[in-house]
Length: 340
Ligand code: SD4
Image (tube, rainbow, N blue to C red):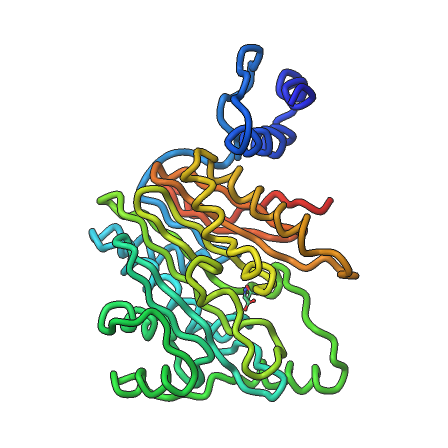
C-alpha cells in the first residue's frame, strides 16, 4: 500500500491505473483504507473511465455494433433491445471469425453457436451448441421472453428456433471453410488477439438508467464437437444486476467458467470495487489459480460498467481492446493487461 501511494505522489499516471485499482480491491476485501496521506484520486482510476449514461461498451473493436446499440438507445429503446440489435451486427458479419456467420467451426467442420442475454429485471435467456441459425442472440432473447427456461441446447434449441420462424442457413463462408481446411493440414490453432476480432460481449445503460447485456460467439476455433464455452453461461460469460452493474468476458472460456468470472466482477462491484478494480481482481484470480502448466498464457478479457456508467476493462495478456460509446465518442481503447 505504501509503495502505491508513493507512485501516486510521483504522478505516474500509467501506474496509477493499475496500482490504485489493486489497492482498492484489497481494501474492499479485508482492510479499512487509510487515506490520510493520499494525494491522488480516492477511487481506482481507469483514465478512460468516466461517469455518464447512456453508455454502450463491447469487447474488441466493434464500432458498428456499438453504433447500432446507441442508435436504439437514442430512439428511447431499452438497453436489452440495444444490446440485441448491437451484437446482431457482428453475428451477420462474415469477416468476424469468432461470431455467427463466418465463425470458425469445430474440428469436425461444423459451426456451433453459444449466446446469452440478460435484462434489467434479472431475466435471462441462453442457447448453446446451436447450429445453422444466423442470429443466436435473438433465439436466446426468445427463450428469455417466451419460455419458463433460461437455457436451450443443441437440437432442442434448433427446433425451438425453427418453430418460432428462424430459418436454417449455412454459417460456413468460403473464408472459414478455407481456414478450416488449412487447420486440418497443419493443426495450428489461431491466437485470440485483435486480428481474430473475437467474441462480442456487450453491455448498455439506456436513458432510463437500466442495464442489460448480451454475449454471442462461435466459441473456440476447432474445439471438440459438443464443447460449450463460457459465453452462454449466465454468471460466466455475462452477468447483469441492475442495482450494481454488469460484466462480460471474452477469451478462453474454460478459465472464465472455472471462476464464474462475470458474476465475480459484479459481486466485487457490489462490495464497493470500481469496474476497473473488479475486472483486475477477476483476471488475477485466473492468473493465480489456473495458469499452472500452461506453456503459452491464454487470453481472457473482462469489461464492466457500474450504475453510474463508469467502466473497467482488463485482460490476462496483451492485445485486448474494447469499444465504448459514451457521450459523443464511439471509440476503441487498448485494455491494460496482467502478464507483462
Ligand atoms: C469461448 N469465450 O467459447 C468464448 C470465445 C472467445 O476468445 O471469447 N474467444 O470460450
